Every structure is written in C-alpha cells, then in structure tokens.
Image (cartoon, rainbow, N blue to C red; front, side):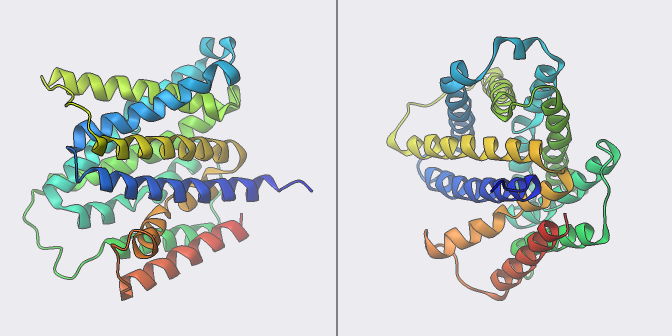
Length: 291
C-alpha cells in the first residue's frame, strides 16, 4: 500500500516539527554552559558536517552545475544565518514572549509566498487551519502584563523579519527541488553556506571560538537533530504543497511545550497550554484533512 503524497508530506512535516522542538530543548540545556553565539555556530556547523558525511553516497557531481544549487545557496544566506540573528536580536530588544508571538506569523508569510510565487490555491479550510495554528502559537507566547512597551517600534521588524525569511526559504527550496529532486542536496548546500556566513560574521567581529567543553556537546546533539529535521522538511516540501506543509511545521512550539511538560519537567499545565494545544491540533487536522 502506497502512502498518499499529501499525507506523506504532512507526516514528514509533523516529524520535522517534533525534531526541531526537541532540538530547541536540547539547545536550551547547552545555554546553561555556553554563550549563545558560539553555540549557534556549533549547532549549524554540526548540521552541515552531518550532511557532508553522507554526501559522497547520495549527491551526484552533476548537481553542482545547476541553477538549483544557486537557489539552495540563496536560502542558506538567510536561513538560518540571518533568521536566527534577527530572532536573537528580537529577544534582546523585546524579550522572548513578544518575539515568539510575532514569529508565529511564519505560516501567514508562507501562505502569501505559496499563492504569489508558486501559484497555489488557498481554500477557506486551509486558511482557517493556518489561522488556528498561528493563534495557537501566539497564545503560547502570551503573558499577562507582558506587552508593556519598553522597546523602540522598529524592533517589531526583527521577529517579523525572522518569520519572513524563514517562510521565504520554503518556495525557493521547492523551485530548486523541481530541477534537482534531492532534499539532501538542498540541506547540504543551504547549511554549508549558512555556516560560512555565520562563522565569517563572528570572526569579522574580532571574536574567537571558546575552548570547547562538555557543555558544548548539547549544541552538537541539537545540530544532529536539526540535520534530520531539515531533511524531513525538505522532503515534505518536495512531496506536498507549501500551503499544507508550512502550518504543520509551524506547530513545533506545541511539541516544545509538551516536551517541557512531560520530559524536561520545565512546563506546567495552564490555560495557555490547553488553548495552544487545542488550537494547533485543530488547525493541523483541518489542514491535513482538507489538503
């Protein structure tokens, strides 16, 4: 029995969201032992290294001399290199609560790109499902009294910019996969460019990587999880429509909450937890059923 491509894409997107959430939790453990910037470099570098380890077995030489390579490299310039830095800057100026809430607009940007760039068709059911996911993620970030403004208005553009560039990477990847249908190659090129950009920026600031400690191993583990997550996401983008994949991938904060609640014991059940899980699950089911 062959699994329907749409359902296959949805399952892979859900798996990618779960792995990304686990990666965030593992990375959070590393932040207790190391600075964020070197940790991010180790994370992205590990993911790139994983892709290169298996590249000789799955990547053909002819892949490199195609326009798809340029598209995958373009994605690597801003995702995760630029999007991560914008998100970190957003947290610095606005705090994690509001930054997370505004970053939840990712599926909305993705929906716009799917319609304008890929010519996909939005239906009422897909729209409602996407909106439910966005609202659910936004609720998870909401804190009473947490919206008092002590930051410049331009800072709103930081998390919105992070969401924009994360979403922009999806349609560009899909176009590249139409020429070279290799999700692995897409991840290889993108993360290779990203580690060059991130590490180059770090060195241009006159900074040096610290002496590696056991605490940095958490970032290595996070990078390994990211490698599988990115491969699953790229495979999903090659199989399904962006309007289906984007809102499902965006539900990773729900897995973050559940992992924090049941595995890492850093979350408590509240009305926000219940509302987030309910809205996101309802949205994801709506998207899958009506794709």
